[in-house]
Length: 408
Length: 188
Figure: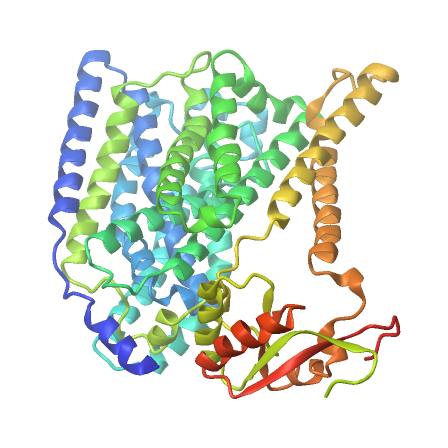
C-alpha cells in the first residue's frame, strides 16, 4: 500500500479558507435577536438586576467553552498527542476567541463599579460588606484587587491563547516546522499550572462571590470540570458540522479520531458527576449552616426540580448514552449528547447564578435568554470570520500525516 | 510432523507480513468458515474488521453485573440502616441515600470488575490450560516473528477440499496441519 501517496492526496482535499456564511448568518441573527430580547425584557419588566445576572450567565457560557478549548490545546501539546492534530484547529478556533471574551467581560466590570443596585457581586454593597464574615473576606473581595485579578487572568489567557493559536497558524505556511511544535510543547507546561490557578480564582471571583457568605474549596475544580466537558461538546458539534461542509477535507477525520472525542466527553462527564457530588456530599454531611444554606436554597421549592434536572442532563443521560463503545463513534448519539451537555452547562451556570435573585422559584424570561443568545451570537460571528482567514486543519504540523493515519 | 498420540484438528497458514494476513483474513471471513482465529506476535491494526469480529459480550455482562451491584448496595444499606437495624446518625433521616452513595459506587465497581475478570477468563478459554498451537509446536513462532491463520476442523476431507485452497488462494505458501495431543499430558 502506498501510504504516502494516499495521505498527501487526502491533505489535498483540505479546502482553502473561506468565510462560513451559515455561521456568520446564524451568529448575526442570534446576536441581534439576543440584544432585542434583552432590550425588550428591560423595557417591559424594568429589572436591571435580572438582565445583569442573565448577562453573567451568557458571558460565563462562552467563557467556559473558550477557555476549556484553550486548555485542550495546551493539553494536546503537553501530552504530544497525535490523534488530535487533525482536530486541533477546531479547538484553536474556540480558544482564539479569548480576546472577544475579554471584551464581553467589560460590562461585568462596569456593573461592578457602578451597578450596585443590580445585586451583582453583593459584597460590593455596604449592607452585605458590613456582615462579619464578608468583612473578614474584604482583603480579597475588594474592587481594586478584583479588577487587578480580572486584568491578570485575561492577560495570561490572552497571551497564551495568542501564542498557541498564532504559532499554529504560522506553521501552516511551513512544511513541518518542528521548532514551533517543540516551543509550544515546552510552554504548555507552565500554562497548565497557571490555568489551574487562574480558573480557580476566576471562578471564585465571578461565580462563587455572587454568594459572598458561602465558600467551597472544590469550586475551582467544579468550574473546570463543567468547562472542559462543554468545550469538548462544542468541539464535537463543530467537527461534525465542518466534516459535513467539507472544511475538514474528505476522509481525514474518521471514527478513530471521533472515538477519542467521545471518550473524553464521557470521561469528563463522569468527572463532573464525581466533583459535583463530592461538593454536595461534604456540605450535606458536615451540615454547617455557613455552607449548607447554599445547597438548601437549591433543593427547596422549584429549585429542587432544577437540581434534579441538572443531575440528569449533566450526568445520568450522557453517562448512560455514551457508555458503550459503539456510542462513542455514533454520529447521531454524539451530536445529541453534545447538545445535551451544552444545555447542561447552561443549566449548571443558571443553577449557580440565579438562586441569588430568584430565591423561591426559578424563572426564565427574556432577560435570561436574551443575553445568552447575544453572547453566543457574537461568539459565532467572530468564529465565522476566523474561518475566512485560516485553514480548518493545522496543515503545517509535522505530526499531521501521523495523525491522519492514527488508529486506535 | 504428526506423532503418535496426536490427531489432526485443523490447518494453519503461516504469514510473514501483516498486510498479507489481513487480506487472507478477509477471504476466510467471506468464505463463511466459522471456527478460526488469527495469531500474531503484536497487535495488527485493522485485523478486527478484516476478521469480521463481532462485539464482545463482555461489556453487556459487565453492565448487568454493575447494576446488580448497585441494587445490592441500595438494598444492603437501606435494609440494614433503615429497616432491620434503624440507627439515626447525625440527626439525618434513616434512609439517607446521600451517605450511601460511596457504597453504591463501590459495589457498582466491585461487581463490574469481578464479573469482567471472570468472563475474560471464560471467554478467552484460559481454563483450557493448553492449546493445539502448543501441541503443534507453533506457539513459539506466532509469539516470535510470524503470523498465522488457524482454521479448526476435525473433518480431514473438508480441510483438504475447502480450507487448503482457501489459504492457497490467499497467497499463503507455508501451510501446515494443526495437531492436538490425544493423551491428557500437555506438552509445552
